Length: 431
Ligand code: EPZ
Image (cartoon, rainbow, N blue to C red; front, side, top):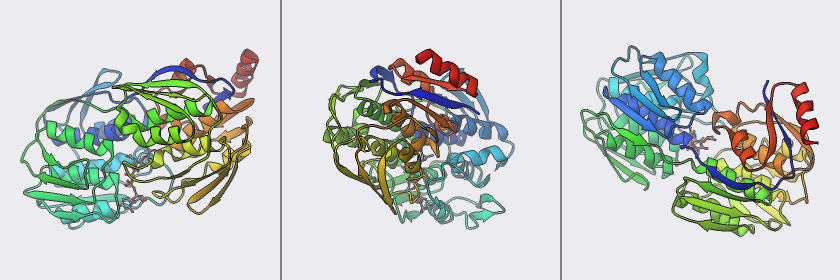
C-alpha cells in the first residue's frame, strides 16, 4: 500500500500553482449531463474523486474525452440508464449529484448511496425533501440506493433546515429544467455553489442569487452546450498557505481568487503570518513562532470546516492555548490521536479541541483518517523533527493532485513509497 515518507524540518519556500476546485468540479461534471450537446470543461482537477465521478458517468453511457490532462469534452446525448450502481460509486460523496441531474433530465434516478469521508453521520434528508417538493414524491432510500421518480418536475419553494452545500447544488441541478419557479432559501454560499450556478447559466439555465441566502431558479425546457473553466480550489490553496505557516516558510499560492481565501488569510494574520495579496496570488510568510487563537468553523464566508485540521496542526505549534470549535461535522477530530503521537498536546471535548501549543512535533508512523485530516498530518510531518510515515494516502489523493510533487517543488523532503525497502532507501538518501 502506498505511503508518504517525510523528513521534516525544511522551511517550504517558493510558488505553487493551485488546480481547479474539486467540489465545484463534482457538481459541474454532474451538471454537464443535463444537455445532449457537447460541453467542454477546463481546469478539472485530476484527482480520485473526479475520476470516480467520470467513471460513474461513463457507466450510464456518457462519453467523456480527455482533451488534455485538465480539459474534458463531455457528451451525454446517449445515456442508456438512469441507474448508477456498483461498489466504486460508494467511494465518493458527490455521486448524489447524479440524482439531481438525472432527475432533472429524465424525471428518474437511482444511485447507490454515497460514501465519502467519514467525518460524521452526513444525512441526506434535505436533498430528499427538496426532490419531493419538486415532484419526486417517492424520493427515498431503497435497498442501499437513493431513488427518485417524478411524472414531471414542478418548481417549488424549498426552505433548507441547515446550510448544506450538497443539497443546495443537488436541488439546483434538479430544478433548472423543472416547470416554473424554484426558490431555495437558506442556501449555501460557498464559491463552488456559485461556480456550479454560473456553469448552469452558461448552459442556458436561469439561476439568480447564487452566493446569497436565496437562490431563484426559473425553469427552462432545454440546456445547451458550453465551454467553462472551473474556479481554483479554495481548500488546496488554504492547505499550502498553512504549509508556509507550520514550516516557517514563504509560499505564494498562484492562480487563486484571494476573495475566496479571506477567512483563511485573516486567521493566518491573526496567528502571526504576513500576507500579501495580488490579483490572482496570495503570499504567506511565517518568520516567527505562531500565536494562539480561537476559531470556529462555519459555512462560507466563515472559516471552512475543510481547513479545520490544517489550522489545528498549526495551532498545535503556536504559543499558548488555542481553541478550535467544529460546528459543521460531529466527527472531525479523529486525526487528533495521530497528531498526539507526534507530540501534540490537545484535548477534544465533543466539538471543541483545546490545544496547548508545543515547541515541536516529532516524526512517527501515522495513518490518514480522511482527506483533509490526511493533508493536515502531512503538514505536521513537514514541520516535525525526524521521519514520519503516513499510511492510507489514498484519502489524500481523493482531493489533492500531485500533493507530494508540489510540496517537493517547495523544498519538502518527502516521497511516495510502496514498501519498507523504499522507506529505507529514502532515509539513506536524505540522511
Ligand atoms: C460538502 O459536503 C463538501 N463535499 C465537503 O468537503 C465539505 O466539508 C462540506 O460540503 C461543507 O463545506 C463536497 O462538496 C463533495 P453539507 P456535503 O451538505 O455537501 C448536514 C472535502 O474534504 N446535512 O454542506 O456533504 C451535514 O450533516 C469534503 O472536500 C444534513 O443534516 O456537506 C452537515 O452537518 C469533506 N442533511 C451540514 O449539514 C442533509 O440533507 C453541512 O453538510 C445535508 C446536510
